[in-house]
Every structure is written in C-alpha cells, then in structure tokens.
Picture 1 (cartoon, rainbow, N blue to C red):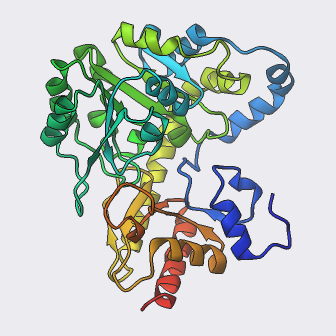
Picture 2: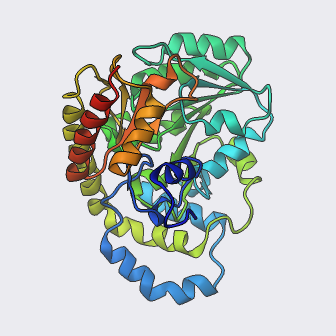
Picture 3: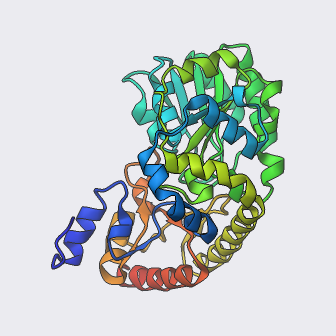
Amino acid sequence: MTPKNSSAQESYKFVSSQHGGYWRHDFIDHNYLYNLYFPPEDFFTHITKKIHQLVLNYPIAQKDLAGLVGDLIGQKPEHIVVGNGAAELIKIIAGMNRKLIVPVPSFNEYANACLHGNVVEFALEAPSFQLDVDKFAAEAIRSKARLAVVVSPNNPTSLLVPKAELVRLVKKLADHDCMLIVDESFIDFAQNRDQETLENDIENYPNLVIFKSMSKAYGICGIRIGYMLTANTDFATKVRQGIHIWNLNGFAEEFLRLAPQYRQAFTDSCDKVKADRDHFYKQLQTIQGMIVYPPDANYIFCRLPDHAASAPEVTEKLFITHNMYIKHCQGKTMPESDRYLRIASRTQAENTKLVEALHDVIGLETK
C-alpha cells in the first residue's frame, strides 16, 4: 500500500505497476473493464446472509459447476469447462504446447501465457485494425498453428469481428487441424449480441471453442468466473484435466446459483452500459484531432491528436491533476503504440468529467 502522504506522482507509479486492488485507492478507475450496474443489490444482501456457510464449507466441483453455467446460458454441461476466470483456461491451453496464432494488438495474456516460440502474432493493420480473415487463415495454415485465437469484441480496439467472418474462418481452419478460439468476453455489450455470438453454433463446428470471462459483463471481477464452451469433447476433456478439483470458491458457486433469476436485470444492465458508452463515444469526438473508434464493448479505443503529448504522458498527467486513471497502449504490439488510449466507460456523469479532464490535459500538453 502506498503511504497516505505520498505524492500523486508516487501514487501513479505504484498504481500503474499493479494488476488490481484499485478500490483501495482514492481515484476514478477508467482502466479496468466491468459492468457497474450488475449484480443487483439483492445479490449482495443474499451473500451477506450466507457468508458463514460460504466461508466454512467446501464448494462444489467441476461437474456441478458446469451444470450451473449450463442452466444460465442454455447449454449442455458436457460442453462446458468452468475456470477461475478466463485467465485459468488461457493458462491451460497455453500449456498444451501447441503453436498459437493471435491477431495483435489484443489481450496480452494469450501470448504471454504461451511457451517461448509457440506464439505467432498476426499484425492488425493500422489505421482500421480490422481483422482480415483470409490473410489470418492463410498465416495460421502457413505457420502450422494448432490454435487460432480471435477476441471479439477485441481488447483494446473494442471492435467486433462479424459472425459471418468468424464462420468463414472456422471453416477455413477445419481441414488444417486448427481449433478456433473465439473470446466473447465483451459480446454482451455489442449492439446485436444475439445475432453475433457463436455460442449456439458450436455443434456445427468441431474446431470451434468459445471462451468467456464473466467478470466483465456480470461485474464480478473479485469472484473470478470464466467458462469454455465447445462441442469437441476431446478438447474439453484435455482442458478439464488441467483444472484442480475446487478451482472456484463458494462465492462463485452461489453467484451461479442465483444468476438465472437475474436474467432480465442483467439484460437491462448491459443496455444501460451501452447507452452510457454510446454517449461517451460522442463526447470523446469533441476533442479536436482525436480519432475515436466506434466501440462494440464497454470501452473506447482512441488515437491521440498529433499535437498532444504521448499516451503515457497524458495518462500520468490525467492521474496527477484529475485523479482519473485510464490505460495507455504503449507496449502493445502495434505501430505507434504510444499514441493510443483505451478508456473504460463508467457512468455518464463520470464519463463527462473525464472528457472535460482530457480537454484540459491535452490542451496543457500541446506542443
């Protein structure tokens, strides 16, 4: 923990080196990505009443967890593997010693978790950062990748790959012993979620796998739940072998038991997130020279104006002068990564204050 009398600059250095625990510090978090409007308060009341039992007793194991997730998403339990967040599942597939190809920039964990030499990074071309499915498939086949990963909507770009394109991709890879993993962690914030998700198509494609972190859409980052969905029973069995017997705790189990009764509340919360994000998108476009990418997730990808300082400098200045924290993209595998920001949408009031602060910081930092 940083000392209470530390300077704002020291606090920034400390916070920017962390991977969570932000709620313990007094700043507005526009970095991490989650739904502010879910779970409903009734869930917390229930958990509070059950806390002694949840702490004192062993939780259920994988087979029953898969049944709970299956009830929630309308899928067969045998097609589901439940992880301690999607990160646990990513680590397991990375340990399979299979060559993996992933478009970049993307969620770094897929590449970081793999053994050295087992990752092929396929560059998304600026300025569009759209995935060219034909070129990606050709590179996957040429490099003899056994796993191809597409995050849709992508992180950090917030861009969706249309379902029709992903179906073309999975068909192209089918004859080359290559599984397609589509990470749909942010799909609930897409405008046409039900038309774009591939969850109901898994039985049509034996080489299709869906990954989903529930933390983002369901607002449960501290509980840690993710799942894998595939009709390929051999692949599911291999992943299950990497899961230990009690990989989720009782709080996660209780959430999954209660979640089906909150389906409408969940849908309403996602609609609220989308409305706030769309308003935020329009507000960010008022910053002269800022390129703001149309978002499909609950965050927005931006390229700073040419006259502004670098993204790391703007991020630090925003924290020090306005007590707001956003993510810069320096270090992501992309050209001019130090010119890009990823900004999480929060409430409309907080988003408005952030836009005002960015106007101020970018104005102060003009060259």
